[in-house]
Amino acid sequence: MTNTINNPLEPLTANEVQLAVTILKDAGKVTPTTRFVSISLREPNKKLVHEQKRDLPREAFAVLFDNGTNSCYEACVSLANREVVSWKHVPGVQPTMTVDEQVECEQAVLASPEFKAALKKQYGVDDTSLVMVDIWSAGNYGQPEESNRRLARPLCFLRPDPTDNGYVRPIEGIRPVVDLNEMCVIRVEEYGHWPLPLVTANYSADRVANQRKDIKPLEITQPEGPSFEVEGYTVKWQNWSFVIGFNAREGLTLHNIKYNDRGKERSILYRASLTEMVVPYGDPAPTQFRKNAFDVGEYGMGMCANSLELGCDCLGLIRYFDAHLCNSRGEPLTIKNAICMHEEDFGILWKHTDRRLNVPEVRRSRRLVVSSVSTVENYEYGFFWYLYQDGNIQFEIKLTGILSLGALKPGEKSPYGSLIAPQLYAPNHQHFFNVRLDFDLDGVANSVYQIDVSQDEPGPKNPHGNAFSARPTLLKSEKQALANLKLETARTWKIVNPNVTNVVGEPIGYKFFAGDNALPMGSTDAWWRKRAGFVNHHVWVTPYSEDERYGAGDYPNQSRGGDGLIKWTEADRPIENTDVVFWYTFGHTHIPRPEDYPVMPTAYIGFLLKPNGFFDMNPANDVPPSPKKEAKSCCH
Ligand SMILES: [Cu+2]
Image 1 (cartoon, protein in one colour):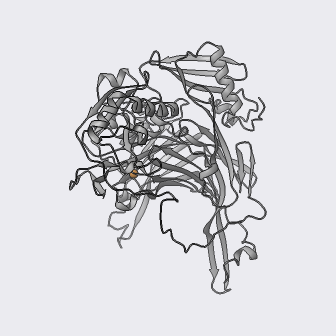
Image 2 (spheres, helix red, strand yellow):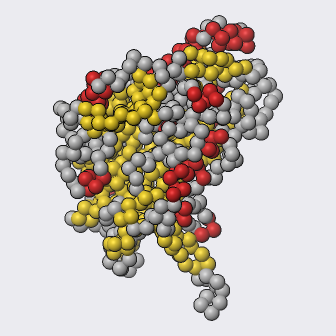
Image 3 (cartoon, rainbow, N blue to C red):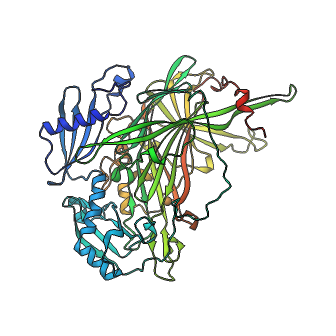
């Protein structure tokens, strides 16, 4: 190994990924029809990491799929001993579709005589070079082929010219079905004819005329450099330290988040990750009802990550990190600058003016941003973790990109979507995300309280009717913990370490504050919901288990459902004073609007973790005033 590993949780290096491929090939595990779905770090045992054991042996976890036998395999590979430690056939599952399959699927559709014939018949078009084919997962609707073939159901569009925005011209009536094992179109389903919308709308700089001219430069300078220190993927910033992780499935992950509290390293989160997401669409039309993308388990959020080498728009001094993956044939695939890290000014951290002394004390807030952006066909998702000087941790997802559009017949409207332009509509949909937060507040033994605020009953103890109080409920088992947000009681959750007390004798803790959220609009027997059990509750709490990582289970692609959180929590395991994992599902209900077209202004959704008796006082009390020069840069 040429690269030094600073922390055992750092992601695999390019060399390690390649070594894992070589070991698997040398062990005879790879046939000409094998695809490497993913190779990622097999994270070392948590106990050993906590014991700060150095030089833990590096291992890789690989998911492989043999197109020849329609079989999925999981392998653990010891990179230190150069051997396959375990090899397991996982029957009856379809792992994440690979990027290679996206590309090959498009080629297969474009080469299909049946597809060409349908295109010719419906639109008089011979030339397929302007057709865009977006791979879409097939899902599972109870059809036998969905359980025994590797399928995709692409959506197709016809560009007016090679660089125009093709999504405005959906080929609504033609739906090819592709067998990804054979990589060929097995049939073309036709549902009628919709003329191509005659509109065109663009967003690219070279096509938007009359761009506004009143924007003066805004530059962020950090003449002495950034305030963070980086070694490999390990970061230190303003009392914080953590490790950046990345893998093909989850994309950006954060590990071992700690805060140095007056010289003492205190653990907060062991691992924070997006485990799954699903975008169910609400139109029952035959051409639309199958749209419900599980962007983590079906597409791979990390695999779809952007290289920010070209497309980063952060200001300031930026530090990038590469993501080392492999393509489905095991060849190196490095996403250069997949992760962006920088500091941002964030307004006022705190302020008070002593009126009698007339002395204002004000401090500027600065936050550290670690982010990554993925393009999943038409949509973009930005994943932004923020660390603040006052101990707050925030996660924000930025939704942008292009709406999934459908064609309507002239004069037609749909009750299930919004007319965006003539003959063009965007179906209603929701975006549900599930995040896994493995808390380790001052050690692994933590408990979770659900906090409901409610009015006190009128009576002798509440003679003025103004009394209200926060009522904590200790969550003792998984089923008791299942809950939704509740506006009536301003519901929050507090994660504590019952064994460590703070200055006022209470257990130290962090509070979870939800942001925007939604309830699923699809009925409980909708096929997508069987697979997306994590949308059934906003909050889930489980005891830590190494192999419980994904809210919809390990293999949601084409599954019949019932896996993941809904399955694990059936055991109703105890969750008190133990290593707990807090899972949060949050949804954005998107009733599209013309302003979301041709490209959607960013929508935001996320949550906030705030220290709550974790520190003895405001940990940002020691932030000094900004240098005078910096503070006066506003004077005109
Ligand atoms: Cu949306």
